Length: 190
Image (cartoon, rainbow, N blue to C red; front, side, top):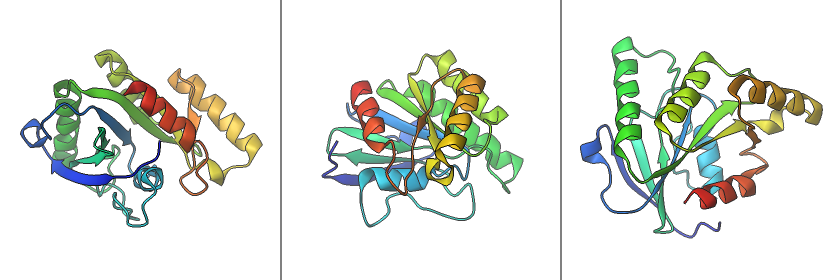
């Protein structure tokens, strides 16, 4: 997909703040520090970042909606695993995700990001189980694929597949590996 228009719509903490209208959503979810912001920025191909990149995990605290080509919303969900935040804030973020997943009839796909360099965490397992239980289509994506050799990446992808029960798509925000395939998956879901 050629991205010709990207517009920040809103950052919301409850369904009352979600954008109205009929546009479908594709949501990106993953642990804090999985490379979600870098991937989103690379996917839309803008020099000016749409998603904030930080060395401190857990910066995305709202559900951020971006309108792409006047056709759909790309949705940046708060990271899970949130390092260095109080338990009360973690509970709020979990509630925000639950409200989002259960209140958006136009949610077409959840892209679940895992770091290819690490085995899936209990939180990654929980996210896969959660969206499966809710009947929401999803795609597991293994980020930071450029950080491993081809053999290391194949072993890591096999481990992720066995652990999560789904074939992961390897991607790299740095060298754009897997981006065209991810766009095709997203377009098919839309």
